[in-house]
Image 1 (spheres, rainbow, N blue to C red):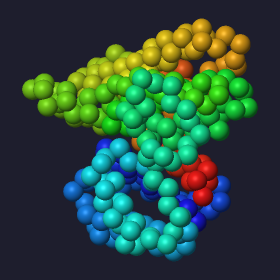
Image 2: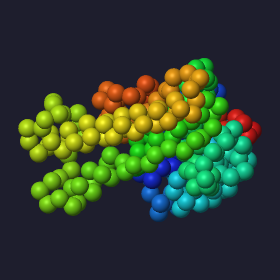
Image 3: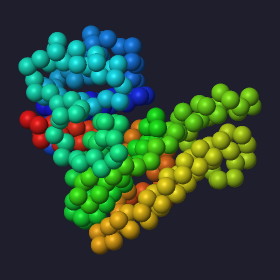
Length: 260
């Protein structure tokens, strides 16, 4: 079985694949202070009972990636391992000014989105990744990474507001009864949920306009939501076509298969 590890700034998502099927997945907090041995103890307790035959890893946190390398060298030395970094075959051309700036997770998501959604329709797609930041990644009909947009994430925006506004506080992030909040809690929930949904809809609409100019003869643009905070805006944002919570893990599996 293949163990996939997606290290984000806030959470780390692990998944075990039995062939093409995701057998199980877990979400744990990311702590850049964790050592290789601490990571091994945590991961070992999760994957107990699964026979791991390979690993595929991407990370946006250099400190954690360094410790994962050490962990692999100690506890998974004989297993085929793919770490998403320069030199790894991803099959994703990066049509941007500086490819080295592109996070590994965005490359992984591009491959997964194109493979799962765009190839049948021969149209572009947009991945909206709701994490620590909200990433909109644009994929050409050929599976090329064209660039995108980055915005502050939902949770960090709420945290910043609560920290800077004396009479405001953190609230449970759920859809309120109406857009017009009748109290401070509902008003904050409305501004957060509907506000971020509107932000995404606006950016997606503008990106689609540019894609229509770039690829006038291609199929319709497909918009895929992923990331831990995506459920907050599903059903509220109007321009999202699909929700794939395991998009990054699927991409890690696909890249591992290309390299082993």
